[in-house]
Image: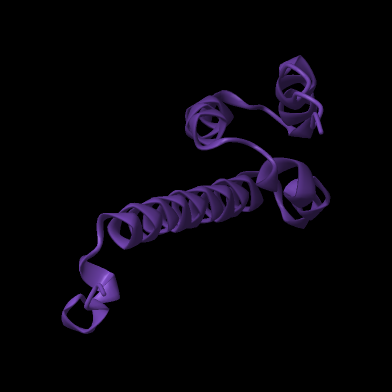
Length: 97
């Protein structure tokens, strides 16, 4: 019979692969959430509290889009510019089951 008592689950390649992927996904989600919060704070400083209505849409943006927006918003003159920037984004792909 095989003796599994000497093998730690954390030392297996499967565990390391699964844990590593989960760790990277969590790290990516954390970066994206923080970037969205930063963009909202920047917008709020420049354009006031009315930007809160855009929070759900901004939270859906990818990290790359958030980084682009953080630079673009420096040139925005008002919320119309934000609205136009968001409207110019391609539609997100639909979930395929």
